Length: 128
Length: 330
Image 1 (cartoon, each protein chain N blue to C red):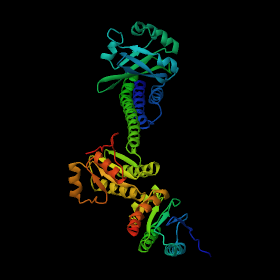
Image 2 (tube, rainbow over the protein chains, first blue to last red):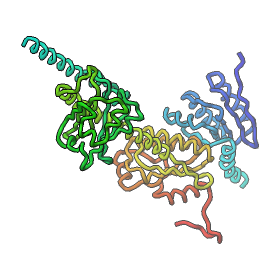
Image 3 (cartoon, chains in turn red, green):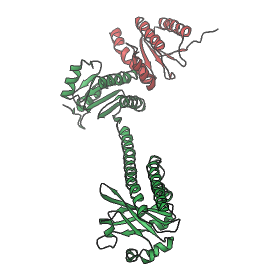
């Protein structure tokens, strides 16, 4: 059976992926591999993970998201999670699963802005 | 002699059976069904009469007023049946002294004639009648009036005694009904007030672009905390807020539970990308929070709403200036 692969798109120096269905074992592993490979190959400075279409986030998925963020961070890319639904936010807080260390934003637009703000000083440093 | 004894004994048995029924019928009173309907039907059975009505004393009119429904009297007629009890009324004596008033013959009774009620009696077909007072703590609250014994005889003292016992119970039943209705009405009113309060309890105010204020007022329990969190998160999405100010000036008690709810709401807001700011912590509340060992470190706090708003503007890299470009603030 072919594993569903989540498309990863590029905007400026950032990557964007939108998850439409709950991530499970094989798909999650595939997604991690794909993403890290793309960050390596594109030298992306940031990554937006959009969860607008997700109604339920369980502790497994929350951990995947936190793991991906940490790994991407190690490779020099900032990660912003966007589009969490209010009900999802409430259940994450109730579960005590809070995706520590993950930056969140209301939607994709805000996510990209935050990445630009995060990346701008680094560029200045590099240019200077 | 033997016949007399027998009839006395029979009469006694009949009364005893009737008393048992009186005791029984009140146990069988059904809630919801009209109380006057129940009382009048019970009296019709108890005394074996054709008609029965209940009249209640109305302090405003100073009169006994017929209550619908009655047995054997049409509803539109019984509503117009009024016996004035004001000073000088011939029926006043009854109000002050007696518990029962027997009318053997409508046309010959001086009180009925004086009250001008003979026409009404003829209209509804009353030939002989009896009025027995219902008293509650000594106060006359109304009368029960059965009319026309089925055997055609006039009412006697035995009927009056029996109905007097019944009436004392009926008075309590009517009072219970009245209290029940009053309590039901009050409960419905409180339910409406509560619904209004709940609607008003979670206001989300968008003050400036990207800034929401939640003025929290009153006690916060789990239910309310849940609604506050939902209102807050929906408000963040709706107004695309980047900063939310939780104003707890109006929250009288902040215990561990409330603090926990606030922290959760703040974390959930953070997950939607909005920064929470807590303002309006009063001295006693601050003492409680520290005393309880609750940690609110992850939420930015400011003294009052004004400072909170300035801080929110700073987060958004904005400030309020005068038309001349001078900074406005402390």
